[in-house]
Each structure stands twice: as structure tokens, then as C-alpha cells.
Amino acid sequence: MDFRLSDDQLAFQETARKFSRDVFTPNAGRWDEEKHFPVDELREAAALGFGGMYVSPDYDGTGLGRLDSAIILEELAAGCTSTAAYISIHNMVAAMIDRFGAEPLKKKFLPKLCSMEWFASYCLTEPSSGSDAASLRTKAVRDGDHYILNGSKAFISGGGRSDVYAIMVRTGDDGPKGISCVLVENGTPGLSFGAQEKKLGWNSQPTSAVILEDCRIPVTNRLGAEGEGFKIAMVGLDGGRINIGACSLGAARASLEIATDYVQTRTQFNQTLAGFQSVQFKLADMATDLHAARLMVHDAAMRLDAKEPDATKYCAMAKRFASDVGFEVCNTALQLHGGYGYLKDYPIERFLRDARVHQILEGTNEIMRVIVSRYVLQSGGRS
Image (tube, rainbow, N blue to C red; front, top):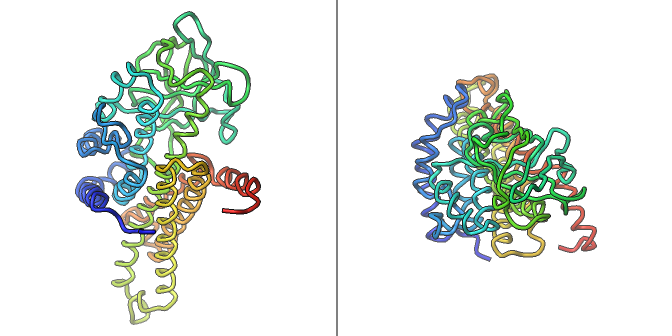
């Protein structure tokens, strides 16, 4: 097993790192404070190939693998975790269209998504169905060559701003086999949005409810066949979980670097904080846990790229572990700053706020444990 990155991956990493350092890092605090969605900077990222990372070059995508994108997203998240996470979500939708969309849909949507001329949102969660996603109630009723959609989605990143929404709807009976996935363009009659949510973090991306009231769309806007929507949604989430793990790595790594610099300059009791063994041990544990989390994320990404049958288990493991580690590293970094860490003059509190939601979205960490435990029980505990 070779854990070293390839020359191409090192090049992706350096490109993303430089872009993040030059564009995301200087602006992230302002975007957070002003709740600003950085459209121009996102399109700059897309110009580097980060808008359609999994999309075929035939549709202007980059055609990268999951490990490649995990490396890129860690770097972007070290600059602005919230904006990197939106890039992940946008890419999730583009990948779903690339994999499951009919040719006319690919031609219509993918080039504009890859350039981020258009932005995309993933719509699964509802007010009454969070972790129990298969119980969703948003309905699509067939009317000739169209569907009429009614229902609502909650906590949608890009809500009100995105140009296309990949929405999971019920076209059949109760349960996962009655769910389909459709694309709805912004501006379609019957599509509206709730007020922008006031959030703890992720403030550089808009978030709102998506509301469908007799919203009429062509049947040709469906991804895959009727009844395949839940499978399509879960395929999207496998990759999304790796990406959220990678974003957690970026937030944690940036926090560790900032804390390491701080403890070497902050003096108490006639020595720097770095001179205290208790602080040294904290830094050692943060670095060790971060390295272990990165290995898990990269391993899951390689398994997903290889289409291994139990890749879902490893994606869930990686997401759970990396998001828990990511938050704890940020929290410890804040603690090492003492009272200063609690101030917005320092970026640690923003990384902590942005990383906290990673333990909730793309499937809560409790649901990750449910997924892993099923595999464990099925296999008798064998890896």
C-alpha cells in the first residue's frame, strides 16, 4: 500500500492550496460576518476545474476521482470551510446528473454547472423527515408528459440562489422504492423559497426551505427511472460524506496550524505555552487524530472510486470519524487560545462554528453508526 499522493494529486493539492490561501483565507471572515455568497470567487474556483470535478470532460467537467476531490476540498476548507462545503454540494448534484441523467439533461445543465454560471442544490431533507429520509412526503403526480410537484424541503444549501434543484419526490408507494429524483429550475412557476435561515455557521452559503406548490415540470427532467430516486440520493451521499469529512480535515488542519503558531508566541508563567508538556501533548493528539482521520477519508475515497461493494460502510466510517475529530481539533485549538479564541478577531471560532454542522448533515453521525453497525452484524464483525 502506497499512501503517497501521485504527481497529479500533488499538483491538484498545490493549485487548491494557493487558490484557497490567496482568495478564500483573506475573505472568509467578511463572508461569514456579512453572510455573503461569494459568486465571483466560486466562478474563479470553477475556472480551475472545481465546479465539475466528477463530470466527464465531454460536458466540460474535470473527470476527477473521489480521492482527488477529497485532497482539493481539504485545501479549500482550510481557507473557508463554509464555501468549500457548498462546492461539495454543487458537485454532488453535477455528478448525479452526469451519472444518471439522459443526454439532453447532460447537455443542458452540465456545462453551465461546471463553469458555475449556474449553481445547484441537493434537496432531500423535509421538515418532517430528517434522518428517516425514506419517509419523505413531497409528491410528484404524473399529468401526461409532466409532473405536478407539491411539498417542501428544509435546510437547503443554496436555497433561493441556486439555478437548479435536484429534488427527491414521491412518485409511488411509501418507502424508498416510491421515490424519484427530478430537476427543477429556478423561476419555474410554483417554486418558491422560505426566509433565509439564521445559522450558527456556514454563513457564506444561503440556506432556506424550498417550497413546491403545483409546480409543473417535464417528465424528462427526471434522473433515472421512476423509483430510483432514493438509490440516486444515497449514491450522492456516499461521495458527499467523503467530501464533508475532507472539509472537516481542512478546518481542523487550519485550526491546528493557527494554534501551533499561537502557543509558540503566547507567554505565561515566564515561558511560552509551547513549553508546557500538557500543551505539547494536546498538539500531539490533535496531529495524530487529524492524520488518522485523513487516512480514513482517503481510504473511503479509494474504495468508492474502485466501486467496492461495501464502500458505503467506509464512507460512513470516514464521515463519522473525520467530522468528530475535525470539531474536537477546532475546539481544542480554541481552548489553547483561551479567551482570545472566543473572539472573532481570531478565525478559530469560525472554523469551530462551520465544522459543527458536519456532525449533522449528509446523515447525522448517529445514522453513520447505524449504517456501520448493519455491515458489522451482516459480516459477523469481519472487515
